[in-house]
Image 1 (cartoon, rainbow, N blue to C red):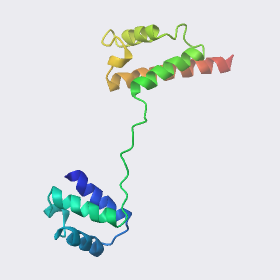
Image 2 (image 1 turned 180 degrees about the vertical axis):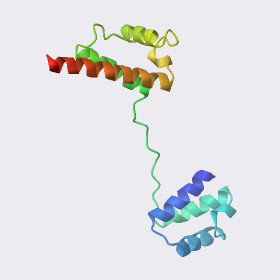
Image 3 (image 1 turned 120 degrees about the vertical axis):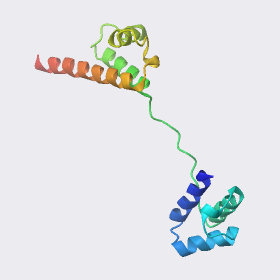
Image 4 (image 1 turned 30 degrees about the vertical axis):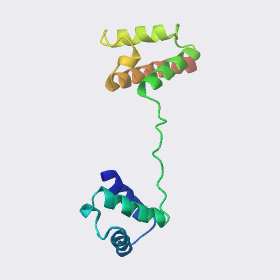
Length: 137
């Protein structure tokens, strides 16, 4: 029900309606002038009235952001490609995670967000140190 109310308010904004026009559309569609007085059926009628006036609801955006675990794995592989790591295998990463977390986590997939962020930051620092040393030589 809250989703329907939100869509109606988005429609009002998208269509650039002033308050009086908005209330008039609600009243014409449902006989009520406020969403808070409406049930699901009335809210659907009101939403349809806005769609009839040109409101286009957009489908929810798909999540495309990588998970923290994906970021950790990507950074590990990048460091391997740069030659920073002797062994850039998944087994080596699991061993690194196990050591860095004192055995609390055996693989990156099992780490909580806080721990994964700490691991990412530690790898970034390691990467910076090596890159800085390479630039000094």
